[in-house]
Amino acid sequence: MARRLDQIIVIDVESTCWQGRPPEGQQAEIIEVGVCSVDVATGQRLERQSLLVRPEHSTVSEYCTALTTLTQEQVEGGVPFAVACAILQHHYLCDERSWASYGDYDRRMFEEQCRARGIEFPFGPTHINLKNLLAIASGWPRELGTAEALQTLGIAFEGTEHRGVDDAWNIAGILTYLLLKCRIEHGE
Image (cartoon, rainbow, N blue to C red; front, top):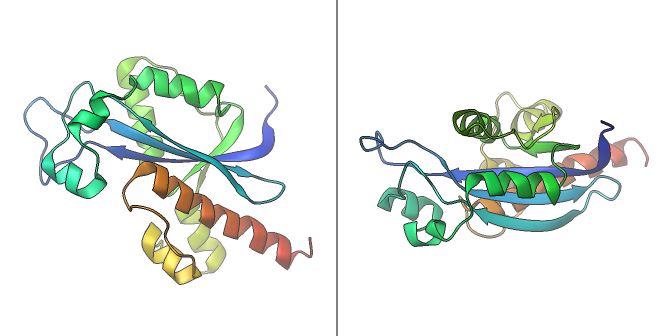
């Protein structure tokens, strides 16, 4: 299958979480997939979307709600994980395009959840770890968290931190910064 190089799809997931260990019988699972597409030619952020995902093996804790603002009631109205994966494949063509996340957590969560549920991995083979790439490209001695990286780059955070849709938008801003900076330095 030919790779599409027209867009890069930025993904950020939020998962069920607890302060300490999960309760007996529960496990961390994806409850929101934040998506933001970036046009490669212009370096502009395009659409963004929040896919709320109904958990099957956990509930949203008070700690998780305090961190993400997501409630059990909200995610109960979400789509099954398989439907979220199908949306990523059919609407965003994630299996044909490069995709990016800030770190490897999002990739690992998708891999583990797809494997555990026997669902086809919705992404193609090209994953860009923007956390690592930004640190290397900037000559930083270590990787920075999203908020610290944005602040260091002079980019204001937009929205609510730890909401997948807003995090994906801001991470896409980092990708845009890298694309445009590279082009400026190479006289394009």
